[in-house]
Length: 278
Image (cartoon, rainbow, N blue to C red; front, side, top):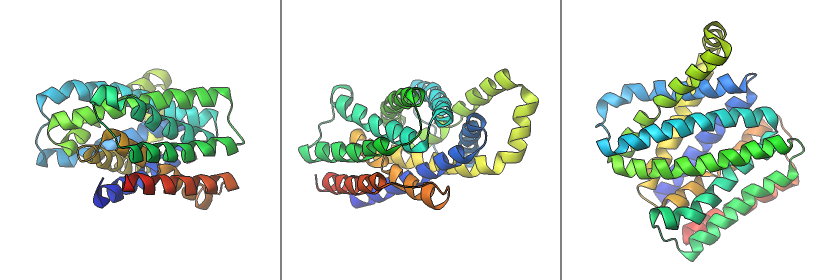
């Protein structure tokens, strides 16, 4: 993996941690997640006119991704309601690349070097270390986080293949972002009624647009990187977003960070180095 790809994936990881912090800090996690998704769709609209349409063969992947993204945002909201970010985020983002790495050879026929496998395992071990220092979050939070890790791994494969099939990773990303907010808000309207949801939107549209723009940029960078490097490698490197999440949680959310978080940061940094050299 080249240095420019690594830098852009890491920048995408920073954006990813930022929008997750926006959801976590909000008073309504479910509608906050829906707003992030809507903000991503709105951010994508102006650029659609300047990009080619995805190849028709990519349409099934776009539709499948919309359903998976709907499940993903719902599980993000539910997991953050049930548990502490120090437990939920590492499990969601740490288990997913392990699933991708374990199955990419079978699904994508990608062959990774021994150094890359060691790097992926090291990064994942560092991320999962954070779960041991969590003081909050019980069985429900763990099950929700693990379920979302499976969803993350699944849409990683779907979108990795879809972006390659589409012929243009950016175009695929932008078109893919339009359907999930439709599903999320249709669900919200059916569960809560139109008036309460629109009231929330009126007072929180700015947060949604900011977080959504970061979300779509983050994922677009990851999908672009998947056209330049193995999907499993990109998926693992992207999970370094937990490092940025730690900084955000301490500096902005005023959460306390134990020694385990700093140990995990060092382990993850070593994993990035090993993967780069591999």
